[in-house]
Structures are given as C-alpha cells and as structure tokens.
Length: 161
Image 1 (tube, helix red, strand yellow):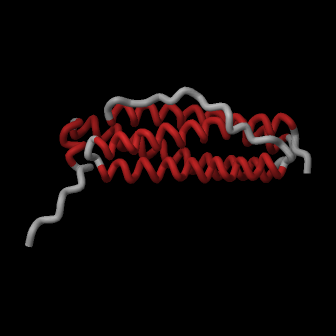
Image 2 (tube, one colour):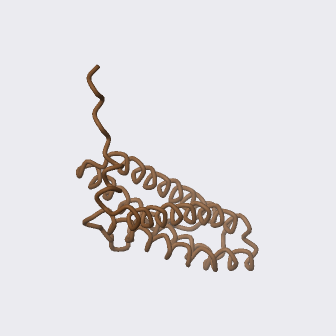
Image 3 (tube, one colour):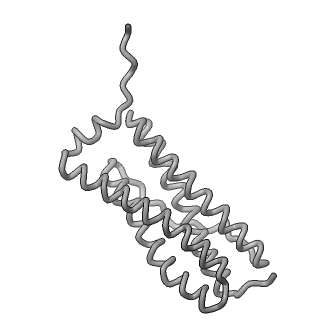
C-alpha cells in the first residue's frame, strides 16, 4: 500500500530522532555505569531500549507504506559530561520530538492515515512520560543537591552476614 510522501517523510524524520536518542541514551547509560551510578544507568539503558522499539515501529510502518527507512542519518549527539547535563540534553531531544509529533498527528489525520497518527500518539505518550521523569529528576537535583541526589543512585554492595 503506497503511503503519502509527506507522511513517509515525517516518519523518516521521526526515525532519525529515535535513532539519535537510542545512541545518546545508550552512551549516557554507559557513562553513568562507569561513574558508579548503576541504578540510574539501568533506567537510562531502558529508555534507550524504549527508543529502539519506537524506531522498530516506525521502520515497520515506513516499509508497510512502501517507503524506504533512512538509517543513514543521525542528528548530532548531545552528550552530557555530568548527570544534570545528561538530563537536560535528553530533555531537549524529547521536547523536539514532541514538537514534531503533535502537528504530525494532525497532518496524518488530515491525510486519512489514522494508523500512522495512532502510532505517533503512542510514541507521544511515551515521550511525555520520559519528559515527566526528566523534569522530576531535575527538580530532585535542585531540591536535594547533586551530591545527595547522586548518592541515592549508587548500588551498595551487600553486607557480610
């Protein structure tokens, strides 16, 4: 079933963002683990995997619409050198994605592609949840201070007993 060229282009734009987010979150998770923040690293890695699912859904949709998924284009990674920087940089990606998805949903509906609109709505809900998580973490960092906040994210070795 040949899809609308504008819808396929929008799907590819979203795919680019998802592929970029996969890499950024994965590298942030590895950095966090290296710094000893294993609990945070586990969460960030899970976010990377969620973005991978989004990329898979989008790829499947592009192929169904007889388009060609563009895996060759990535946006520049915004790597944070501290946990707060990572949160802020990850939040920027999510805001950009949401700013693309909201009008994109309407455009898909106008063109009669309800399935792509529904897919974008599903991804939008995940991205809004991720922004809420990042906002909460940034708020906690502000309230607790970086040192106390980060001390809660270190996995402690089991006590001898």
